Structure formats: C-alpha cells, structure tokens
Amino acid sequence: MTAASASPSPSLQEIASCVAGYDPNALPVAQAQEFIARLVPRVQAVEMLAIRSALGRVLARDIVSAINVPAHDNSAMDGYALRGADLSPDADTELQVVGTGFAGQQFVGGTVARGHCVRIMTGAVMPAGLDTVVPQEFVKSLGDKGNDRIRVPAGIVRTGDNRRLAGEDLARGEAALSAGRLLRPADLGLLASLGQAEVPVLRRLRVAFFSTGDELRSIGEPLAAGCVYDSNRYTLWGMLQRLGVELIDLGVVRDEPAALEAAFRSAAETADAVITSGGVSVGEADHTKQVMARLGDVLFWRIAMRPGRPMAIGRISSSADGTRSAILFGLPGNPVAVMVTFYAFVRDALLAMSGTTAAPLPMLRAACVSAIRKKPGRTEYQRGIVSRSADGAWRVEITGSQGSGILRSMSQANGLVVLHHEQGNVEAGGLVDVLPFDGLV
Image (tube, rainbow, N blue to C red; front, side):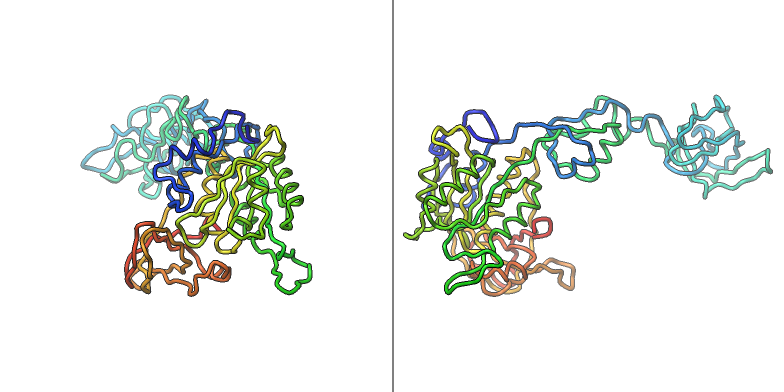
C-alpha cells in the first residue's frame, strides 16, 4: 500500500517479468522507463478549488458543459446584421437600417422585414431572421438621420459570414475538459465561460528529497578539506518546482545508518515519492544502499546511459508493517547525472503519479556543428546550445567537456542532445534529437 494509492501493487519482480529484455546490470533507457511507468501509482484524493487557485493542477473529473457557449447566435464584429438572401449576387445591395443591437442586450425591434438590416455591435445577439454581418468599414451610408440606409458592395460578404453560432465554442452536454488535464490559463477562462466557480482537482503529489554524503556541506557552513557544497538539492528543488508538486526538503543526510533510516522513514511517512542523490554506486563506504534495501523492495540498476549509470528504484516503507510507503528514486551523486536521470526517468513518472495525461516533451531535430563519437549500446545525453543557422534551420553545438560533475555545462546549455541506444557516431552536420530546456528548467 502506498501513500498515493490504496490499491494492491505488483511486486518489483512481477513488473520486471513484464518488461522485455530486462537486465538490471545493463538496462536500456527505454526498458527502465517502461518499468517505472508500470511501477508508479496515481494520486486518488480529490479536492475542490476555486478556478483562480487551480492553475497548474490536475483535473480530477471530466468537465461537461451545462450551457451552450455562446448561448445565442451573435455578431463577430461591429457592422450590420442582415438577411443573406437579400444580397444581390451581381450588384450592390441597398438596405434600410431599422435599429441597433448592443452587446449584452436582446434586440427589441421584433422581426426584421426583408430589405431591412440592424446596426450591430461585436458580441450582440443576432436579431431573429438575420444570419449575416457585413463589417462597417465595407458599407457606405446613404441616408440622412432618421432615414438611415446603407449600400453593401456586391460580393463583399456571403450568407453566414461574421456570425458566431450558439454552442459554436461548446455545446450543452459536450465534454469541455478531460480528466487528467494539467490546467493552463486558457482552461481557467474556459471554465469561467461555463459559469463554473470551482473545479475538482487531484491533490498535489508530495515529494521528499535529500542529499547523502559525508563530504556535503550546506550553504553557509565552512568547507573542510575534501568537502563540497551541496548543489543537488537546489537543482532538484528547481526541477520539482516546475512540476507543481508539494516539496519536502530533508536537507543533507550524513552517510550513517541511523540518520539515513530516520530520513527514509520520515520521507515515506509523509510523501508519495522520495528522491535521493548519492549513495547508489558501488562504493563500499556508502550505507545508503543497505538502508534502502532494508526498508523496502528496492532494485539497484546499472542503466545503459551516460551520464547517470547507477540508479535505485522501488518502494520504501515508513514502518515494519509497511502500512505507508513511497516510491523511491535513488539518483547518482554527480550534479549533471542527477539532472539527466531526473529528466530521463523521474519527471514523467512524477507527472504520471500526479494523475496528468500530459504527453512526453517533444524533441527538435538539429544539425550537429561538430562530430560526436559514440558506440551503440547505450543512450548518451550531451549538453548543447541550440540556435538557428542563417537559413533558419536548427543547429546545436556541444558545450565542451561532458563530465558528469561539470554543472556549469548544464547552466550554459539550453538543451540536451539525445543520442539513442542503437545510434553510433555522428558526423559534423548530422541530424540529432535535442530535448530543449525551455519549459523544463
């Protein structure tokens, strides 16, 4: 049982048996993604929010329109409403103006006779029997005050032009928004157009995260020899903020069994997902892997990727009886590897846990400025700077040294060049896939 869902969950071994080619010691990126997609549960709890508080939240149920939007046929612009049948196909048409229709008001002039028209404003209800609007700039006024007549040039409009139909945006009984949608600004406006003040959304996913390692120091602490400031919690915080989840920052946890166990149990008690950085490699000094294994059902992978080969995945419990548990993502300790594995595996998994049906991020195809050496058999992510060439085509230049500890290269880049599992060397000018950072970071 997890904090996100009360339904029975398959064991990790059962999930692994469903993934073709599963090999924890050389796991391709695609198989790792499939495994995680089968593992993660969905948030079930629903809450009602005012629409102004619902931006970025996940819609819990379909929203069905109870009204027609717009409610009546109306004018798409300022002009004159007329009967299309009155228009002469080969000559100018003269019409008598018998009144004015204003937005927000029903025309009170009754039925409009043939040969007559109504001055009309944008959004005003179309008078009964009239089906066409001619923009005011195309019309010539002929009459004096009190005897207003207009001339409509031949062929300037056709029957039905510039008229919005009742229910054209949404018809009564039509699904306006589907469950699983991540609500955007336009969606809030759509809800408001239906007169809906509140909307059912899934509760926010709760994500706990912390860094492990005796060498790490928090900002403000003095650096002893061999120590470094913890940067991973800040990149994780930034990436998680983009997902709109509820964050639980547990700080830096020393590589001591008691401290690690307390952090893991606290995280599993309060969160749906736990993300750690460091302690999942083969180093003998790390206690993190041992504590992970003791507290839950956890697998330790070597993924066929660069950077970011080691990773832990599974479930950890807050207590011995396992009444509350959380999904665990144990990421590598190197700063770039943390970000790459987050984007490759964790981001989409957290969105799925949040209940959203958002599609994976699209990639660009860009010409690589320089050649790249690569052997088939693993997926590589290289930091790149994407720009437009003189002819308008996309081009990408690698940021230089691609070491997994060089965080500056991620700061300089505006996208990740994705070299796929079976892909080999790339020649200068060859096309590659690029995952843009815009919208990610």
